[in-house]
Image (cartoon, rainbow, N blue to C red; front, side):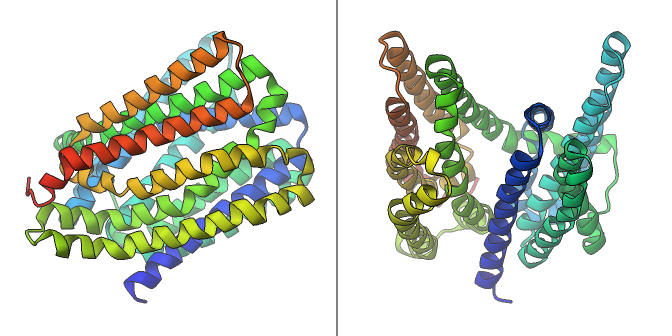
Length: 408
């Protein structure tokens, strides 16, 4: 299978996984009571909190492997050693918690699934970094199919059936990955500490940037909920779902191209013409995708929502507001290859800090001047995205393009 075919197979597997995720959400909403849905929301929050505790180890490990594939076994040992230490510390903390508040099996299961999800995420990134995209696509496809075997459990015990659906996919992915990647055998050792320092160098700041992005998302939700009510938050749900779906393909393209372009940027000594010619295919892929999304957003989405979810038709207008900001962001995002290759993390923090400050100021102004509306909040979301995009452009013009051929 050619490199491009492997790339598109991986994107297809990612889209398949996302589509099945939407189907799972439909089953949850259809079969679970509101109380059980609340418990699932708490369960997913536990898994998400565990995910934040990786503090950039997965991102950093992936980037080190992208730069230097011959280190992957040591990096794998280091990341898994950290995850093992994290698991032991969390379990110890949970044991202390249980002494005061009693044993909570729900919490323990959430912790286990959180750690398993981190390991699955790491091994997924590691396979991308090593160029094993064909194998990764197969692992993703099979693990998604295996997780669907838990759907009958939903009809017997909806709550634990839902937990099983959530847990089985990363668990089966880990097992399959270990079976088909014998060289992923690991050793948990203190000797991994020097590599953890290297991982932190490449991963901690991008992790902080992710936190800033997450803060903006949460502020948006809370401001809508507080100022307009939960019903309005539900009306705006289509925007949350659309944004997630919109970024699936660009994120997959970015991940799969990252190792190749990192090596190119750090080692290339050619002229600018040869450099940009290598990015032409990437931008062609993004451009075709954005054209398809334009057609889908302006012509297909209104029809589908009107037919299937007529109560959410108002959300289409908010989606159209943020669409153009997302397009600009996708076109500017490849600049992050240059930024990350040269470790210009301070500039990235400044970009996202300015965007977050602009967003928070806008929300505050609207709230205290009684101008709260979903339309205005959609424009604030647009402003945040555009500010980040402009920040990337300014960075590239003022600094990034002059370091394209720098070999650190």
